[in-house]
Image 1 (tube, rainbow over the protein chains, first blue to last red):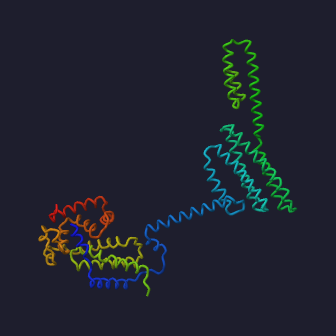
Image 2 (image 1 turned 30 degrees about the horizontal axis):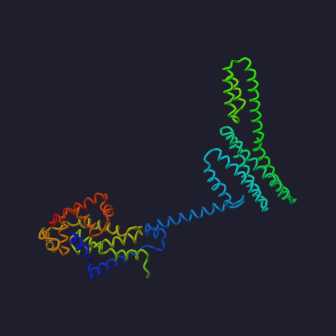
Image 3 (image 1 turned 45 degrees about the vertical axis):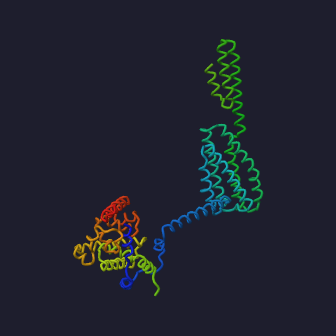
Length: 283
Length: 168
């Protein structure tokens, strides 16, 4: 069976026929010259093998990845006024922020960003670059960041775990304390006598202080003291009432009361005035 | 004068595929001279398209086959089908070879005569597959069928050809 096809496959044009055919085609080529004028990149690309084109696409993707990765890394060290600063704010920080799964992690990241903004201002000051538009840009970013922190802490206070809120606030107060001293130094370092330079910096420093105080207004320590004192008061009242009740109530009632008391003491931190009143009602 | 890119591309294609296209035309019109004429027509038409439109031909081989197919169809439409007498005048003796063994089949005419006795749809796929070495997928594109249909036709065609040649 293969012989049929191998015989048919061997059939070729003879040399004479090839010459004739070639002449005829050459004539046609002379009569109809190509309109091609120069190098056409699009056409040249289309004639390339698909594999080569695929390879080129892969290479370009790798190059883009390397270049973008490199610029993202370089942007980490960028300060307000730098070209890559927008990459740091809009790409790097947003990407990292999107990795924060829950609300607590997001608030923690917002607090970290506040520290980053403060560090940037300090770095600019140390490099004597805190002038003109740089001051304005730094101020804008700082203000925006503080708004975000304030909002996120407020919303977490309403909806989230109070213990976690306390921890985060404590963290924020620590950052505030660390940076207050350095920020204070900037004012003295920029004592140039030139008002146009000093005034915007002074405004920036004032704003930083005001916003830091505003966010840290509900101090963790005081929050804890207030809550603890509330708890103590609630427990005291509870004990007092228990003593009164022992005179009037039966032995069974007293046992029930003690059970309730035991349950409440186990949950010390969550004990508030409201829960105390609930205990009272149950008694 | 230096050759343009299109001229180079076309000349290379001409050198490489002229025999293939010739066989394609010849085995469909069963006339060597006519096959040569059609081959010439195929290359001239392809050149005109390239020269006039600068058309983006990604696979010139399959483009040449497509042009060849249309040239053959046009020729068949223009001329009435060749009678058996005419074929015999040109050296065709299909009836003589119905019971010959494969070992005796030595020339193109006898091989072609066996192929010609097949139904056109089976003949076409067998030639494309075993003479022109096109894959079932390429054949499917050429005849506007699915690769599955092509594979079925190849199998059936081969079975018919074996029966014709007395190989069972």
